[in-house]
Structure formats: C-alpha cells, structure tokens
Image 1 (cartoon, one colour):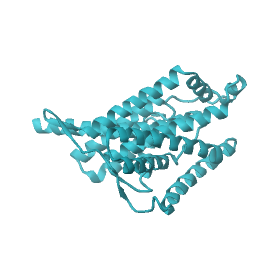
Image 2 (image 1 turned 180 degrees about the vertical axis):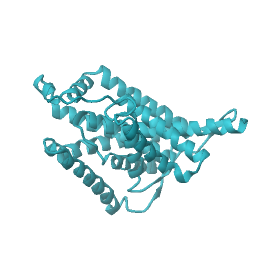
Image 3 (image 1 turned 180 degrees about the horizontal axis):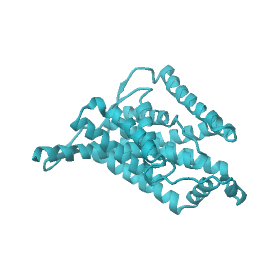
Image 4 (image 1 turned 135 degrees about the horizontal axis):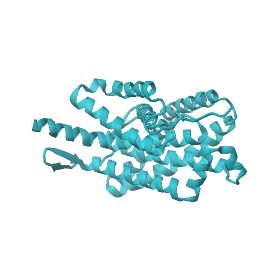
Length: 300
C-alpha cells in the first residue's frame, strides 16, 4: 500500500510539472479566442520557435540557471515579435471574414512554420539534443522531485500569476477585457482594438515561448514538429477548462497533465495520448462550455 501511495505522489508531481506547461500554452489559445473568437492552431509552432531560440542561446552559453533565464528572455522577445507579425499579416485582414477562413489560415501558418523551419540551414529536419542542467533529485519520503520539475512548476506559476495581474489590474488588461466583452463598444469608447489584439497575440506568444523552453528542458529533444502535439493537448486543456476563460485554461492544463501521467504510471504509456483526446470528447458531450466556461446568449 505504501508503494502505491509513493507511486501515486510521484506521478502527481510529474503531472503537475507537465500540466504547468500545458496550462501556459493553453492560456495563449484561450486569450486569443476570448478576444477575436479564433482558434490559433499555429500557437504550438510558436512554442517550437521559442524552443529553438532558447536552444541557440543555451548552446552558446551552456546550460546554467543564468543562461536558462537569458534563453527564456530571448525566446519571449522572438516569439512576441512573431506573434504580432502573424496577427498583422495573416489574421487581421480576415477579421471580418467567416471564421472558417481564419481557421484554415491558422492551419496554413502552422504548416508554414513547421516546414519553413525544416528547410532553414541552421535548424534542419533532424532532432537535436537540448542543453539542460544536470538533473538533481530531491527526496521527499516515498517520492522525489527533480530540480527541473521544480523549475518548471515555479516558473509556470510565476508567469501565470504575472498574467493574472496584467489582466485584472493594469490598464491594458482592462482594455483586453473590454474588447473580449464587446469589440465594437470598446472601439466606440476609445479603445485601440488593433493594439489590444496585437498585444494579446504577443502576450500569448510570450507564454508559448516560456512553455517551449520548459518543455524542451523537461523533455530534452527538439525538432520542427515538436510543437504539434503539445499544442493540440493545450487546446484540449483550454476546451476542458472553458475556452475563453483564463482560470479555466490553468485548471484544464493541470487536470490534463495529471490525467496523462496517471495513465502512463498505472495503465500504459501507449494510452497517454488517447486519454487526452478522450477527455476532449467527453467534455464536449457532457459540458461543451468546459468546466469554467459560460453559455453565450445570442440576441436576435
């Protein structure tokens, strides 16, 4: 019985670590959807760009805590610029078009980023080993936590707390909430809608960059398609928590991460991906708005 609880706690810590990464990525999905009603399927590939930006910094400086912080900062700047560029060139011209047009464009942008990275001479199609800090296990009775897991969980919590502060207590956060509630009314009240939407894409891309660095640190191998599966699972987390809800995205990320690691630990690692998408189907059948989502009434 003691072995069971030890294994359970170990998988719980693993799940919280993985769920922290999913939550960070899911926040980008849910913020963009909450404001422009767009599922940005290129978001997972922005994560890939962030991981590669960090890779080049860490390869030059070595894997130390200071280098990791610098790599994270560089990746955030690169991905923020990329997020704003994608919004300006690909999504803004289609803002008044049917949603299907934007959805197809998002898939196209995703494929462009993946295949564009594959043909770049300094990236290439082959997987690369990610520079990481030496793993140190910290024992806590019947389970242990690695220094990498601690870094992932603490950095994710700090970034989520910073995002909550920006949204709830800053001027631009109030503008974001106004635009998400009613875009036209916010525009009439003097809010620069284009700037707010561009800032939202930049903020989501910054979180994706951090998620990419943390994901590559925890699972140290990168390639141009590495963002596809974490991006899809983060989308599942956003839907699970309630697409458009920031607290819901955080909650959904942690639930999905724990469910996946519990499946790996107690059933089989072969079912870990299947359980994620089974959760998506279940939540769409039982509560389509998600755990913390609310029904939107359409006035006629």
